[in-house]
Length: 398
Ligand code: AMP
Image 1: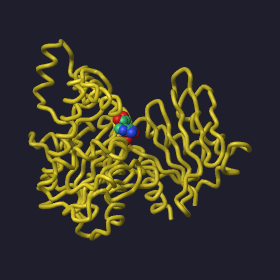
Image 2: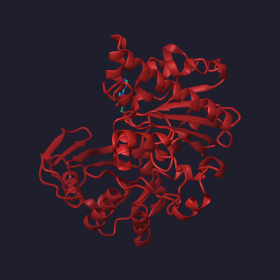
Image 3: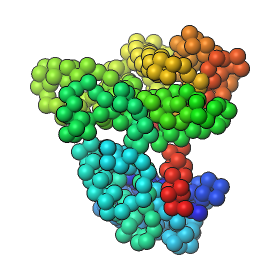
Image 4: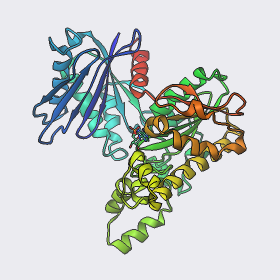
């Protein structure tokens, strides 16, 4: 069975065609600058040369048509006909309280995605455009939505409620949702299997450390807490996002800098995190580490603050679960940055965490990186959100 996985952003569209018989990637690619001048499709068929096509894509509709043409092309295509695609799995960022788990698309589900536009204003409209473009390009092929928020729906009330007047939860569904849910679901499940833990009782902390960063606690694969909130701004320090912050900072900044709330939120989302902390050096850890190693104090502070926040959250989540059996690292920084993993583990020796430095000296591989006598298993596990979406899709169409 072949499943197409789509991740639509406001001006981009990422895709993967996966053969679910052996979970191999048949082709993947990216449409960039949709709706903007200079649209380009980059198509990478497995085992064949990359194909790049610069052509106007006024909307996601044209982008999907170009993806279909690339997939079925005589030269760089990988299938004869789009009828070979059994189903399409779509990443949808915010399901609010309306869509709580992966589901087949129908008119009602599309309306629910629309109803969540105000909760996910940057992503949900693009996600819906992708769905509608697929319906037009492949009538009759089932579409499935997989939510970034569904893993967090298992959180207990005490973890997801904000201590604000209850009427705002009732009126507007203001609560903590926890994003990167597909990644946390995938990695926590895989780590239980990979590290041979009890599938019912394993207490796992997943550190998804990428440009966006979040951390989750789960027991037996069910989320008990997750660091992102109503939006993906809460929690860890990220590439450009502040993470946790006294909300009064917003009022203070607005008054001092003569900004409105939207401008201030833009600063917190796009100009903060390690980028802001370092005085604007970079949001990329490779640049920051190079600057720190050359003696830049702000780069050092940014990296130390980042690591400190992760260590604090791991402590909090260990307390929330009354213990922890495994801690997993994933995403760009988590998978590639052995120095950051080491620094984090150095702050966890009180838990009996013992890193195997040689095993840690690796990038992007599934591997146990703790010493055999470590009380907590530390696991490096590359995330694969596309595969997770494809698996959910298969489960719903079979
Ligand atoms: P992601 O959002 O998961 O794609 O992660 C992207 C981030 O991973 C980049 O901004 C870098 O900060 C980080 N990253 C990628 N490769 C490395 C590396 N070799 N060493 C340190 N950080 C890395």
